[in-house]
Length: 324
Image 1 (cartoon, rainbow, N blue to C red):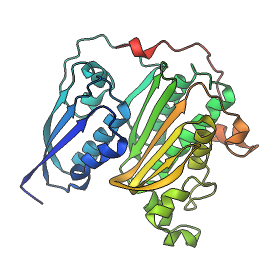
Image 2: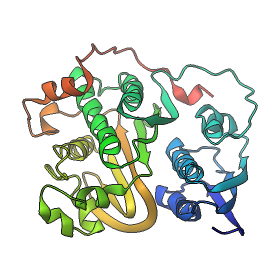
Image 3: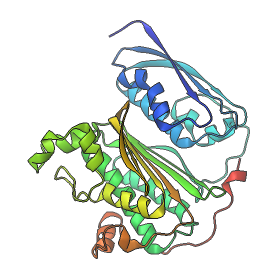
């Protein structure tokens, strides 16, 4: 235990990347019980535009530190042009920061999922259902496509509740109609992909995997420690590839960057656990049979996870860009 107060400054500026945010969180991530942290969060993009997945990384790291017994104090400075948005995405609330909102909250249904902590599969699945409501207004919104996305997100959720050893995590999603994209992040602060894959796997070959190998192969069909089918991240990766989207997986000191033009693993700032980022193009539908190699039992698999599929409401979303 250290009685010396450590100063931490986190800045969210224009064009900041996920890995740059994680790098700024390193002192928080490595802090131990009894450590004293004085944290200054500065959200000052010149554009006044901030992405909620960047905020989720801060929320997850700080709350995990507090849960470990780290003593945290601090402050937040926020650009006046994005202050209301940051508050509406429940960033201040998630950190216990007092902020008087001077606007009327509109319903988030079909537009965004604010920064949300889930404990257990059931609560996490309720947030997945909210994300599906966002997707219903897109060209992607065929019944089969929504089933695929729900199934894939459910498998991500299952990875946390079954493999991370923490049974909880954070989730956020935002649809940007003018950009025709939806951004989704699911993060936990558990043991991470390498430990989950290499600790007592049914297939002994995985015990010798390096962190680099583990994250590189986690999107390959059938790669699992034996407690699942290995279809979760595989299905997500196939969807992203066919959609022309982006998949980023950060775990430990490795980050996988995946799209239809690249697959590479980077040495990166340490993230305790796993953070998965998805960027989906709302104007590019994907054929269902391309996601799980035409797996004929997909509908049954989906019903096992979530129950019977519901009819799709094709009503268009209102323009979120004017909500604030």
